[in-house]
Amino acid sequence: MRIAIPVDEKNIDSNVCMSFGRAPYYLIFDTDTDESEFVVNTAATSAGGAGIRAAQIVADQKVDVLLTPRCGQNAAEVIQAANIKLYKTSGTSIKDNIDAMKAGTLSPLDEIHAGLHGH
Amino acid sequence: MKIAVLSGKGGTGKTLVSVNLAAAADKSLYLDCDVEEPNGHLFFKPEDVEIEEVSVVIPEVNQDLCTGCRKCVDFCRFNALAYVNDQLIVFEEICHSCGGCFMVCPENALIKKDKVIGRIERGQSGSVEVHTGILNTGEVSGIPIVAKLLTGYKDDPDVPVFIDCPPGTACIVMETVASADYCILVAEPTIFGSHNLKMVHELVTLMGKPVGVVLNKVQEGDDPSEEYCLQNDVKILGKIPYDKRLGLLNSNADIAVRVDTHYKTVFSQLLSTARKEATR
Image 1 (cartoon, rainbow over the protein chains, first blue to last red):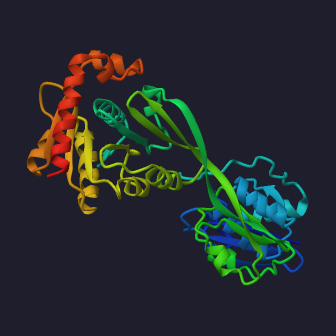
Image 2 (spheres, rainbow over the protein chains, first blue to last red):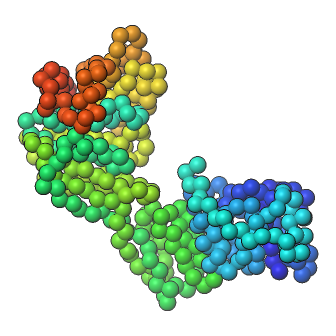
Image 3 (cartoon, rainbow over the protein chains, first blue to last red):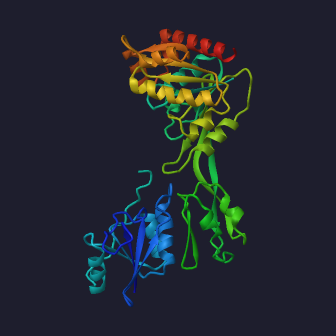
Protein backbone atom coordinates (compact mmCIF):
# COMPACT_ATOMS: atom_id res chain seq x y z
CA MET A 1 0.00 0.00 0.00
CA ARG A 2 1.26 3.45 -0.96
CA ILE A 3 0.40 6.26 1.43
CA ALA A 4 0.58 10.02 0.78
CA ILE A 5 0.78 12.57 3.62
CA PRO A 6 1.16 16.37 3.35
CA VAL A 7 4.23 17.28 5.45
CA ASP A 8 6.01 20.43 6.62
CA GLU A 9 9.58 19.30 5.87
CA LYS A 10 11.47 16.71 3.82
CA ASN A 11 11.95 14.62 6.90
CA ILE A 12 9.91 11.74 8.31
CA ASP A 13 10.44 13.17 11.82
CA SER A 14 8.76 16.47 10.85
CA ASN A 15 5.04 17.11 11.16
CA VAL A 16 1.90 16.51 9.18
CA CYS A 17 1.07 19.77 7.37
CA MET A 18 -2.25 21.37 8.36
CA SER A 19 -3.01 22.22 4.74
CA PHE A 20 -3.33 19.69 1.95
CA GLY A 21 -3.20 21.94 -1.12
CA ARG A 22 -0.57 24.36 0.23
CA ALA A 23 1.70 21.77 1.91
CA PRO A 24 5.33 22.19 0.78
CA TYR A 25 5.92 18.43 0.39
CA TYR A 26 4.13 15.11 0.27
CA LEU A 27 5.60 12.04 1.88
CA ILE A 28 4.99 8.95 -0.21
CA PHE A 29 5.37 5.90 2.01
CA ASP A 30 5.26 2.32 0.75
CA THR A 31 4.14 -0.08 3.50
CA ASP A 32 5.38 -3.13 1.56
CA THR A 33 8.98 -1.92 1.48
CA ASP A 34 8.92 0.71 4.29
CA GLU A 35 10.52 3.10 1.82
CA SER A 36 9.75 6.80 1.94
CA GLU A 37 10.07 9.45 -0.72
CA PHE A 38 9.35 13.18 -0.64
CA VAL A 39 7.63 14.95 -3.50
CA VAL A 40 7.71 18.74 -3.83
CA ASN A 41 4.27 20.32 -4.09
CA THR A 42 4.73 22.70 -7.00
CA ALA A 43 1.13 23.84 -6.52
CA ALA A 44 1.85 25.35 -3.09
CA THR A 45 2.46 28.82 -4.51
CA SER A 46 -0.37 28.80 -7.09
CA ALA A 47 -2.55 31.88 -7.11
CA GLY A 48 -5.62 29.66 -7.22
CA GLY A 49 -6.71 26.08 -7.70
CA ALA A 50 -3.82 24.79 -5.56
CA GLY A 51 -5.89 21.90 -4.23
CA ILE A 52 -6.66 20.61 -7.73
CA ARG A 53 -3.04 20.73 -8.85
CA ALA A 54 -1.84 19.24 -5.53
CA ALA A 55 -4.31 16.36 -5.87
CA GLN A 56 -3.02 15.81 -9.41
CA ILE A 57 0.55 15.55 -8.05
CA VAL A 58 -0.53 13.05 -5.38
CA ALA A 59 -2.62 11.02 -7.86
CA ASP A 60 0.36 10.83 -10.23
CA GLN A 61 2.28 9.07 -7.44
CA LYS A 62 -0.18 6.16 -7.78
CA VAL A 63 -0.94 6.10 -4.09
CA ASP A 64 -3.75 4.06 -2.56
CA VAL A 65 -4.54 6.30 0.39
CA LEU A 66 -4.13 9.95 1.39
CA LEU A 67 -3.81 10.85 5.06
CA THR A 68 -4.59 14.51 5.69
CA PRO A 69 -6.00 16.67 8.49
CA ARG A 70 -8.40 18.26 6.02
CA CYS A 71 -9.19 18.51 2.35
CA GLY A 72 -11.11 20.96 0.16
CA GLN A 73 -13.94 20.08 -2.15
CA ASN A 74 -12.07 20.39 -5.46
CA ALA A 75 -9.04 18.45 -4.23
CA ALA A 76 -11.31 15.73 -2.84
CA GLU A 77 -13.06 15.45 -6.20
CA VAL A 78 -9.74 14.73 -7.93
CA ILE A 79 -8.60 12.35 -5.17
CA GLN A 80 -11.85 10.42 -5.32
CA ALA A 81 -11.82 10.29 -9.14
CA ALA A 82 -8.36 8.74 -8.85
CA ASN A 83 -9.82 6.07 -6.51
CA ILE A 84 -7.59 7.19 -3.65
CA LYS A 85 -9.08 6.67 -0.20
CA LEU A 86 -9.06 9.64 2.19
CA TYR A 87 -8.27 9.23 5.88
CA LYS A 88 -8.10 11.86 8.61
CA THR A 89 -4.76 12.17 10.38
CA SER A 90 -4.64 11.91 14.15
CA GLY A 91 -2.10 14.18 15.86
CA THR A 92 0.86 15.71 14.03
CA SER A 93 3.42 12.87 14.08
CA ILE A 94 4.03 11.41 10.64
CA LYS A 95 5.27 8.09 12.02
CA ASP A 96 2.31 7.67 14.38
CA ASN A 97 -0.07 8.23 11.50
CA ILE A 98 1.68 5.64 9.33
CA ASP A 99 1.49 3.16 12.22
CA ALA A 100 -2.18 3.99 12.79
CA MET A 101 -2.88 3.47 9.08
CA LYS A 102 -1.13 0.11 9.18
CA ALA A 103 -3.10 -0.86 12.29
CA GLY A 104 -6.34 0.28 10.66
CA THR A 105 -7.24 2.73 13.41
CA LEU A 106 -7.58 5.93 11.31
CA SER A 107 -11.05 7.15 10.40
CA PRO A 108 -12.08 8.03 6.85
CA LEU A 109 -12.08 11.80 6.20
CA ASP A 110 -15.71 12.59 5.55
CA GLU A 111 -15.70 16.29 6.39
CA ILE A 112 -14.76 17.98 3.15
CA HIS A 113 -14.59 21.77 3.46
CA ALA A 114 -15.88 24.02 0.72
CA GLY A 115 -12.41 25.44 0.08
CA LEU A 116 -10.54 28.46 1.41
CA HIS A 117 -10.62 30.30 -1.91
CA GLY A 118 -9.64 33.91 -1.71
CA HIS A 119 -8.44 33.68 1.89
CA MET B 1 -19.82 61.87 -23.64
CA LYS B 2 -19.00 59.07 -21.23
CA ILE B 3 -18.54 59.99 -17.59
CA ALA B 4 -17.34 57.30 -15.20
CA VAL B 5 -18.13 57.71 -11.52
CA LEU B 6 -15.78 55.81 -9.26
CA SER B 7 -14.19 55.63 -5.83
CA GLY B 8 -11.44 53.76 -4.09
CA LYS B 9 -13.82 52.04 -1.74
CA GLY B 10 -17.47 51.09 -1.45
CA GLY B 11 -20.08 53.24 0.25
CA THR B 12 -18.68 56.68 -0.65
CA GLY B 13 -21.65 57.63 -2.82
CA LYS B 14 -20.86 56.49 -6.37
CA THR B 15 -24.42 55.40 -6.95
CA LEU B 16 -25.85 58.53 -5.31
CA VAL B 17 -23.77 60.76 -7.60
CA SER B 18 -24.13 58.79 -10.82
CA VAL B 19 -27.89 58.21 -10.42
CA ASN B 20 -28.56 61.86 -9.62
CA LEU B 21 -26.34 63.17 -12.43
CA ALA B 22 -28.12 60.89 -14.89
CA ALA B 23 -31.49 62.06 -13.57
CA ALA B 24 -30.44 65.71 -13.74
CA ALA B 25 -29.63 65.46 -17.47
CA ASP B 26 -32.42 66.05 -20.00
CA LYS B 27 -31.87 62.64 -21.49
CA SER B 28 -29.21 60.18 -20.47
CA LEU B 29 -27.98 56.61 -20.31
CA TYR B 30 -27.02 55.09 -16.97
CA LEU B 31 -24.80 51.99 -17.05
CA ASP B 32 -24.51 50.14 -13.76
CA CYS B 33 -21.15 48.38 -14.07
CA ASP B 34 -20.98 47.56 -10.36
CA VAL B 35 -22.01 44.06 -11.39
CA GLU B 36 -21.35 42.39 -8.04
CA GLU B 37 -23.79 44.69 -6.30
CA PRO B 38 -25.72 46.83 -8.78
CA ASN B 39 -27.93 49.24 -6.84
CA GLY B 40 -28.85 51.94 -9.36
CA HIS B 41 -31.96 50.07 -10.47
CA LEU B 42 -33.34 50.28 -6.92
CA PHE B 43 -33.58 54.06 -7.41
CA PHE B 44 -34.58 54.15 -11.06
CA LYS B 45 -37.09 51.27 -10.90
CA PRO B 46 -36.86 50.92 -14.69
CA GLU B 47 -39.84 49.78 -16.72
CA ASP B 48 -40.22 47.63 -19.84
CA VAL B 49 -37.12 45.72 -18.81
CA GLU B 50 -35.51 43.44 -21.35
CA ILE B 51 -33.04 40.82 -20.23
CA GLU B 52 -29.94 39.63 -22.07
CA GLU B 53 -27.96 36.73 -20.65
CA VAL B 54 -24.16 36.98 -20.63
CA SER B 55 -22.09 33.85 -21.18
CA VAL B 56 -18.45 32.91 -21.26
CA VAL B 57 -16.85 29.97 -23.06
CA ILE B 58 -15.55 27.09 -20.97
CA PRO B 59 -14.17 23.71 -22.07
CA GLU B 60 -16.10 20.45 -22.09
CA VAL B 61 -14.20 17.23 -22.70
CA ASN B 62 -14.80 14.75 -25.46
CA GLN B 63 -13.35 11.78 -23.56
CA ASP B 64 -13.22 9.69 -26.77
CA LEU B 65 -10.80 12.13 -28.40
CA CYS B 66 -8.73 12.95 -25.30
CA THR B 67 -5.47 10.98 -25.31
CA GLY B 68 -4.34 12.16 -21.88
CA CYS B 69 -1.37 14.21 -23.11
CA ARG B 70 -2.09 16.74 -20.35
CA LYS B 71 -1.03 19.73 -22.38
CA CYS B 72 -4.15 21.55 -21.21
CA VAL B 73 -3.56 20.55 -17.57
CA ASP B 74 0.00 21.88 -17.67
CA PHE B 75 -1.05 25.03 -19.51
CA CYS B 76 -3.88 26.12 -17.21
CA ARG B 77 -2.59 28.83 -14.84
CA PHE B 78 -5.76 28.60 -12.80
CA ASN B 79 -5.48 24.84 -12.27
CA ALA B 80 -8.99 24.32 -13.61
CA LEU B 81 -8.11 20.97 -15.20
CA ALA B 82 -6.95 17.63 -13.79
CA TYR B 83 -6.26 14.31 -15.47
CA VAL B 84 -6.69 11.23 -13.28
CA ASN B 85 -7.76 7.65 -13.88
CA ASP B 86 -7.76 8.21 -17.67
CA GLN B 87 -10.29 11.02 -17.36
CA LEU B 88 -9.93 14.76 -17.85
CA ILE B 89 -11.85 16.71 -15.20
CA VAL B 90 -12.88 20.35 -15.74
CA PHE B 91 -13.56 22.59 -12.74
CA GLU B 92 -15.97 25.05 -14.27
CA GLU B 93 -15.97 27.49 -11.35
CA ILE B 94 -12.15 27.74 -11.39
CA CYS B 95 -11.96 28.33 -15.18
CA HIS B 96 -11.31 31.96 -16.17
CA SER B 97 -12.33 31.40 -19.82
CA CYS B 98 -8.93 32.37 -21.19
CA GLY B 99 -9.38 29.86 -24.01
CA GLY B 100 -5.79 28.59 -23.81
CA CYS B 101 -6.74 24.93 -23.38
CA PHE B 102 -8.55 24.92 -26.74
CA MET B 103 -5.39 26.24 -28.38
CA VAL B 104 -2.96 23.75 -26.86
CA CYS B 105 -5.10 20.61 -27.31
CA PRO B 106 -3.60 18.69 -30.25
CA GLU B 107 -6.60 16.35 -30.53
CA ASN B 108 -9.46 18.89 -30.63
CA ALA B 109 -10.83 17.03 -27.65
CA LEU B 110 -12.17 20.17 -25.96
CA ILE B 111 -15.56 21.45 -26.96
CA LYS B 112 -16.50 25.09 -26.44
CA LYS B 113 -19.43 25.32 -24.08
CA ASP B 114 -21.33 28.46 -23.13
CA LYS B 115 -21.74 29.10 -19.44
CA VAL B 116 -24.11 31.83 -18.28
CA ILE B 117 -22.40 34.04 -15.68
CA GLY B 118 -24.98 36.78 -15.37
CA ARG B 119 -27.28 39.12 -17.25
CA ILE B 120 -27.93 42.66 -18.39
CA GLU B 121 -31.30 44.25 -17.71
CA ARG B 122 -32.25 47.20 -19.92
CA GLY B 123 -35.21 49.43 -19.15
CA GLN B 124 -36.44 53.01 -19.05
CA SER B 125 -36.92 55.33 -16.07
CA GLY B 126 -38.36 58.67 -17.21
CA SER B 127 -35.70 60.35 -19.32
CA VAL B 128 -33.02 57.87 -18.25
CA GLU B 129 -32.26 54.64 -20.03
CA VAL B 130 -31.04 52.21 -17.38
CA HIS B 131 -28.73 49.29 -18.14
CA THR B 132 -27.85 47.07 -15.20
CA GLY B 133 -25.13 44.42 -15.21
CA ILE B 134 -25.72 41.53 -12.80
CA LEU B 135 -23.07 38.91 -12.07
CA ASN B 136 -24.29 35.60 -10.69
CA THR B 137 -23.09 34.78 -7.17
CA GLY B 138 -19.86 32.78 -7.06
CA GLU B 139 -18.58 33.70 -10.53
CA VAL B 140 -14.89 34.60 -10.76
CA SER B 141 -15.10 37.72 -12.90
CA GLY B 142 -17.68 40.26 -13.99
CA ILE B 143 -15.48 41.70 -16.74
CA PRO B 144 -17.39 39.99 -19.61
CA ILE B 145 -20.59 41.66 -18.35
CA VAL B 146 -18.91 45.08 -18.11
CA ALA B 147 -17.50 44.65 -21.62
CA LYS B 148 -20.99 43.89 -22.93
CA LEU B 149 -22.53 46.83 -21.05
CA LEU B 150 -19.99 49.23 -22.54
CA THR B 151 -20.58 48.07 -26.10
CA GLY B 152 -24.24 47.11 -25.92
CA TYR B 153 -25.88 50.47 -26.59
CA LYS B 154 -26.36 52.89 -29.43
CA ASP B 155 -23.91 55.77 -29.10
CA ASP B 156 -25.65 59.13 -29.46
CA PRO B 157 -23.46 62.25 -29.10
CA ASP B 158 -26.41 64.15 -27.61
CA VAL B 159 -27.05 61.60 -24.86
CA PRO B 160 -24.50 61.60 -22.02
CA VAL B 161 -23.55 58.24 -20.57
CA PHE B 162 -23.02 57.86 -16.83
CA ILE B 163 -21.04 54.82 -15.80
CA ASP B 164 -21.48 53.62 -12.21
CA CYS B 165 -18.19 51.79 -11.59
CA PRO B 166 -17.36 48.93 -9.26
CA PRO B 167 -15.51 50.04 -6.11
CA GLY B 168 -11.75 49.79 -5.74
CA THR B 169 -8.95 49.76 -8.29
CA ALA B 170 -9.02 46.16 -9.58
CA CYS B 171 -8.98 44.95 -13.20
CA ILE B 172 -12.74 45.32 -13.51
CA VAL B 173 -12.46 49.04 -12.66
CA MET B 174 -9.81 49.53 -15.34
CA GLU B 175 -12.07 47.78 -17.85
CA THR B 176 -14.96 50.04 -16.85
CA VAL B 177 -12.95 53.26 -17.03
CA ALA B 178 -11.01 52.44 -20.22
CA SER B 179 -13.52 53.98 -22.61
CA ALA B 180 -14.60 56.91 -20.41
CA ASP B 181 -13.99 60.51 -21.50
CA TYR B 182 -13.98 61.85 -17.96
CA CYS B 183 -13.77 60.43 -14.45
CA ILE B 184 -15.58 61.68 -11.38
CA LEU B 185 -14.11 60.42 -8.12
CA VAL B 186 -16.39 60.41 -5.10
CA ALA B 187 -14.56 60.75 -1.78
CA GLU B 188 -15.40 60.70 1.91
CA PRO B 189 -13.96 63.20 4.40
CA THR B 190 -11.90 60.67 6.36
CA ILE B 191 -8.26 59.57 6.40
CA PHE B 192 -9.34 56.19 5.06
CA GLY B 193 -11.40 57.95 2.41
CA SER B 194 -8.44 60.10 1.30
CA HIS B 195 -6.19 57.03 1.13
CA ASN B 196 -8.64 55.32 -1.21
CA LEU B 197 -9.10 58.51 -3.18
CA LYS B 198 -5.34 58.58 -3.73
CA MET B 199 -5.37 54.99 -5.03
CA VAL B 200 -8.14 55.58 -7.53
CA HIS B 201 -6.73 58.98 -8.52
CA GLU B 202 -3.39 57.35 -9.30
CA LEU B 203 -5.16 54.68 -11.36
CA VAL B 204 -7.13 57.06 -13.59
CA THR B 205 -4.11 59.35 -13.96
CA LEU B 206 -2.06 56.37 -15.08
CA MET B 207 -4.82 55.66 -17.61
CA GLY B 208 -4.55 59.23 -18.88
CA LYS B 209 -8.09 60.23 -17.94
CA PRO B 210 -9.12 63.78 -17.05
CA VAL B 211 -10.53 63.75 -13.54
CA GLY B 212 -12.49 65.71 -10.98
CA VAL B 213 -13.57 65.00 -7.42
CA VAL B 214 -16.91 65.21 -5.64
CA LEU B 215 -16.51 65.54 -1.89
CA ASN B 216 -19.38 63.69 -0.25
CA LYS B 217 -20.68 63.64 3.35
CA VAL B 218 -18.97 66.98 3.94
CA GLN B 219 -19.07 68.27 7.54
CA GLU B 220 -17.39 71.06 9.42
CA GLY B 221 -13.78 70.40 10.28
CA ASP B 222 -10.88 68.76 8.53
CA ASP B 223 -11.49 66.96 5.26
CA PRO B 224 -8.43 64.83 4.38
CA SER B 225 -9.86 64.19 0.91
CA GLU B 226 -10.15 67.91 0.24
CA GLU B 227 -6.57 68.35 1.47
CA TYR B 228 -5.45 65.65 -0.96
CA CYS B 229 -7.15 67.48 -3.84
CA LEU B 230 -5.59 70.81 -2.91
CA GLN B 231 -2.13 69.33 -2.47
CA ASN B 232 -2.27 67.44 -5.76
CA ASP B 233 -4.05 70.07 -7.81
CA VAL B 234 -7.10 67.91 -8.43
CA LYS B 235 -10.23 69.76 -9.49
CA ILE B 236 -13.04 69.73 -6.90
CA LEU B 237 -16.29 69.64 -8.87
CA GLY B 238 -18.58 70.05 -5.91
CA LYS B 239 -19.43 69.20 -2.33
CA ILE B 240 -22.39 67.26 -1.01
CA PRO B 241 -23.15 67.92 2.65
CA TYR B 242 -23.61 65.30 5.32
CA ASP B 243 -27.35 65.85 5.36
CA LYS B 244 -29.97 63.75 7.13
CA ARG B 245 -32.57 64.74 4.56
CA LEU B 246 -30.48 63.40 1.69
CA GLY B 247 -29.73 60.27 3.68
CA LEU B 248 -33.45 59.69 4.23
CA LEU B 249 -34.28 60.20 0.56
CA ASN B 250 -31.54 57.79 -0.35
CA SER B 251 -32.55 55.10 2.11
CA ASN B 252 -36.10 55.30 0.79
CA ALA B 253 -34.68 54.66 -2.70
CA ASP B 254 -35.85 58.08 -3.89
CA ILE B 255 -33.84 60.01 -6.44
CA ALA B 256 -33.07 63.34 -4.77
CA VAL B 257 -33.10 65.22 -8.08
CA ARG B 258 -36.64 64.04 -8.80
CA VAL B 259 -38.22 64.79 -5.43
CA ASP B 260 -36.23 67.63 -3.88
CA THR B 261 -35.84 71.04 -5.54
CA HIS B 262 -32.73 71.94 -3.54
CA TYR B 263 -30.88 68.82 -4.60
CA LYS B 264 -32.11 69.22 -8.16
CA THR B 265 -30.18 72.47 -8.19
CA VAL B 266 -27.14 70.93 -6.47
CA PHE B 267 -26.82 68.06 -8.95
CA SER B 268 -27.71 70.19 -11.99
CA GLN B 269 -24.85 72.50 -11.07
CA LEU B 270 -22.56 69.54 -10.53
CA LEU B 271 -23.56 68.15 -13.91
CA SER B 272 -22.93 71.47 -15.60
CA THR B 273 -19.49 71.79 -13.94
CA ALA B 274 -18.54 68.20 -14.84
CA ARG B 275 -19.61 68.62 -18.48
CA LYS B 276 -17.64 71.83 -18.76
CA GLU B 277 -14.57 70.15 -17.29
CA ALA B 278 -15.00 67.10 -19.48
CA THR B 279 -15.11 69.14 -22.69
CA ARG B 280 -12.19 71.36 -21.73
